[in-house]
Image 1: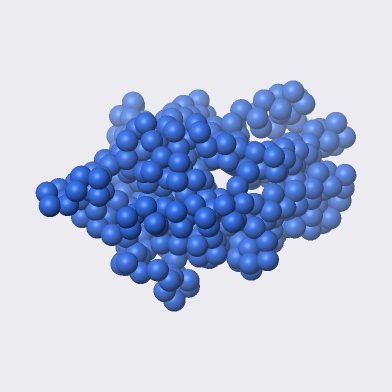
Image 2: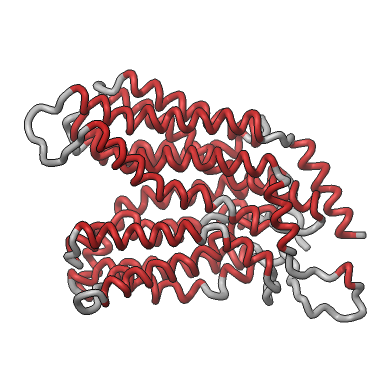
Length: 461
């Protein structure tokens, strides 16, 4: 089996993430607009559809890694196989999330079903793609290299989509019509996602041994590599303090991220008084986020992943909290938010490496590989945060008495309330996450290296 990272992996491991993010942003950016402006559903029906699809997605978020580790490995290995086996189905189902078929309850059922089924299928390659990082990366520096490259591609896709998403949809409308342009966009970018993960499948060839349950009988049963037991997966979670602290800290930064995204338009419209500044803010923030993701692999050479992770939480939380002090000076807010997004880019880049470290701890303790289960748990805080986003934003808007129908001068109370949601609450949340990492993630780089050597020795013996 290959040990060192190839040049292809160092440069291109992340193409799949770029393509996946392009595909998923169709729903993030256009789904609500499709439901209200093209499908012409009422706000109540729109809320029902988005809530059901989001909650069901969150409810299943823990299961993907468990299935990957708990079932018989397929032809090309436990993890690589999931990058290609079912991925091709996604574009054909995902498309119907953006097409209204018929009238009455039928289109509602089809859209909800398409949303649930497509996300259920694509989460398997998404989790497998992260899970293969500790398999391919044999050292902390190699895992950080893969995590950072992956994060750079993913962040770059956000910038790319902001420029090409709507223009591509409008171009496709020339062939399929205005009503089907987002469905066509979902299909095209879904195909691109399939190609992207196939590139990852080829890049990782030779790094993961093909695994089968039907190993020849001449091989001792103790040496056969089979499915991971449920007991080991549970032990790998509940007897893994660093993992538990990591999951909670991750939830704080995802909640902060989604609340910021959801409130940005309100800040620039009601506080800054210029909604056109939103585009400038998003561009600058995404660029700084990408730079942070790129720079993190160089920072990791000078410090441990834990210290980089903790420092990035403090940087992001600190900048957001300071920005609140200057809430009525939008350009200063944009500058401070850009620095905060630099920290978020470092967090985003370092996170898979942190989860990979806890996967090594779990295998060292249990003697069984549960990488997909552990890495897949990184999906849980993200999905929960998506559900919490709406509850937090709408709940606090209700408290401060926000009303979109209000006209005239915006009161200072309303400006302060919106600034608190946009800046202070996310800042405090991320600072709490940093404290949790500092005191809860008790794994050192030296310990991880020693565990990795011990695990490798067990496999050889």
